Length: 229
Ligand code: ADP
Image 1: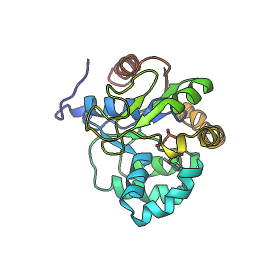
Image 2 (image 1 turned 120 degrees about the vertical axis):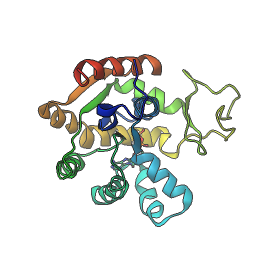
Image 3 (image 1 turned 180 degrees about the vertical axis):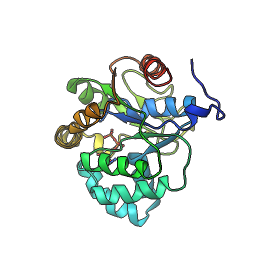
Image 4 (image 1 turned 60 degrees about the horizontal axis):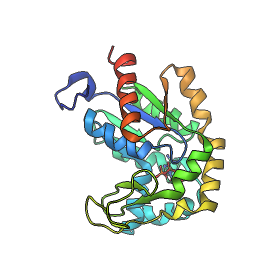
């Protein structure tokens, strides 16, 4: 079902975007898909969290936006993305970017100037109630970035990452108050991207409410039908 070969020609240059509410499963699916399709996983959220953890100037700039649930300004996000993409020629899987119509336009222009394009925008469709439940139960490993859910995929040993032994944490922006703010920000600034990509003809909704492997299977089937056909 999956082509995990780096020599896989067409697959190698495929560019995908994962879109959906915070907590819709973008990070989890991105990790599964990028491994199986040999795509570079680019998560702006992870880039920013790493910058904060390392104490860099970028981290200093973005931390206040993230902690409050606001978006990092477009200009800053685009600088970070361009610096990241300039070194890459293979296929990319974007997770958490673009998040505004302005970011989407900038990405289209960037790809067009390099004779590349977005092959599919995968929209993880999930209702708002599930988002609140999932984010409150989410625990993350700050060391290896593995994601757990206390209700659906808890760690074997409480509070400890099964992959690297790191101590699991509740992300600062997964507190109830900040979750509400992020949902509001999503509706106002990110939801318009669905219409943007739908009119571009590369928008593919997938049900995001089931278990991670089931969602990954649906995405694989969709890509096979719509893209690789
Ligand atoms: P989630 O999708 O669960 O909200 P992310 O890890 O993708 O989590 O993002 C966490 C935070 O990082 C966002 O709330 C925002 O402050 C910032 N961020 C991440 N990506 C972007 C982006 N493309 N544009 C602006 N801000 C971003």
